[in-house]
Image (cartoon, rainbow, N blue to C red; front, side, top):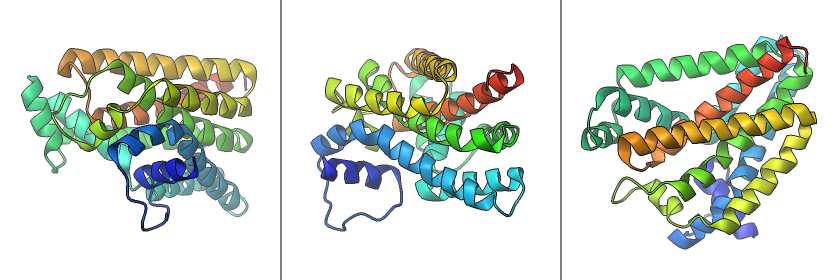
Length: 250
């Protein structure tokens, strides 16, 4: 279990792990059950940055540093997938053209706009929350966003003949989904039961909408699609938190 967790850490973050941690396809797929736990780790470290920064800086500046910390921890792994996905879906009309654009390392207008709007949304929504809620939603959103990989890979086939995401998608089974869901359920306990229930519903809606769109456009998904779903889930949960605050439910 420790080895599988470290494999998940190695795959999703830049945190140091043993140098001799060679990984097989089967192990990487089994390690996916720990993706939500790694998300909780990323969210926890991001929340720690926020909490420490908020001792000496305004809330908005602390939020900015927390977001930068998360980007550094993950090397912008999922943000890159979101940008490639928006470039592909925005610029391609056929499945083949979409996949071709996604593979292009150059960043296009759709990708740039998506990244700008995403980061602005995260910053604005979190900066509008009270400090006591920011750290909770950072942990919850990072956990839930990594959980989305599990149902999407179980639902949809991989759209490419090869790719890094395929190594994960082909090996995800019931054990990984159950383990990841238990982790998410435990992390949701950081919120009130009403907020936790709505967060679970919003996460499920984003997964369903993304899955429907990926199936319609690609008859499957790619690693970039998983990154896009990840980021859309994260920012949707921050927006939910703001809505709950405005309604007086936080």
